[in-house]
Image 1: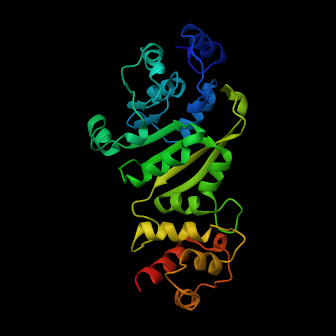
Image 2: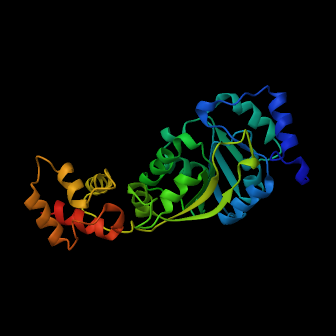
Image 3: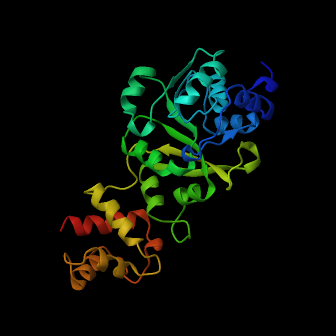
Length: 291
C-alpha cells in the first residue's frame, strides 16, 4: 500500500465521506485527520512498536487506526457513533489486528478490556484524537481507573494540553494540572495545525503525552479530600490561599484554625494557589485531614 492509498489523505477521506454520505455531528466533536505524516509522528512519540497493544478512542473513519495497525501488534478502538461502524469495517478490512467496539469509553471497564484483548506481558498504550468537548472526563476517567496502561498519547485542544502539563506560577497551572500530574508525567510533544483536519476546528491542537507513574507523585491520606482542597484553592484565582480556604471551610473551621494549619504545614497563607507545588498541597491536606 502506498501513502496515497492511506485513509489519512484529503482525496481518500473525501471519497469515504461521499460514499457513505456521512455528515459530521458537532455534538460528537468529529474532526478527521487528513495527513498521515502527522499520524506517524504521533505514533513515534508514543513509542509504539510491533510488540505494543493500543487502545484508541474515537477512530472516526479509521485514519489513525490504520497507522496504528501498521505500527503496533494489535489495536482496540472504541467508537460511540453507530454510523461509523460499517464504515470502519470497510476502511480497515485489510487489517486483521484491529477490534472495533461500538461503546462509550466512559462506560468501559478498561481492566477487563486489557485482560481480554492483550497478553499479560504486553505494554498497552492509549493513542487517540480525542473529541474536544469531552477530553477531560475521558482522561480523568482513565487515570482514576488505575489500570496497567503505560502511557496516553492524545491530540486535544492546545489550551487544555497546556493546562494539564503546566507548572506552578504560570497562568495555565491549576487544579487540572495537579490532578493529571498526580498520576502521570505530562509533556506536550507537538502542536498540530488546523489545516490537517476535516472539518477544520476553530483551535490549534497539541499532542499530550502522559506517562503513568508507578505510584502517585505524592502520598495523601485521602485523595478525594486532597483534590477537593486543591480545587477550593483555585476557586478564585486572584484571592489568597487563606481567603479561598476560609470560604471552603466556612462553618467547619474558623480563621484561627486555618491559620494554625497553614503555619503547621509551613505555608504562607498570603500566597495564591497557583504558587503552590503539588508537594505543598499534599502537605497542607495531610496536615488538615490528619488532625
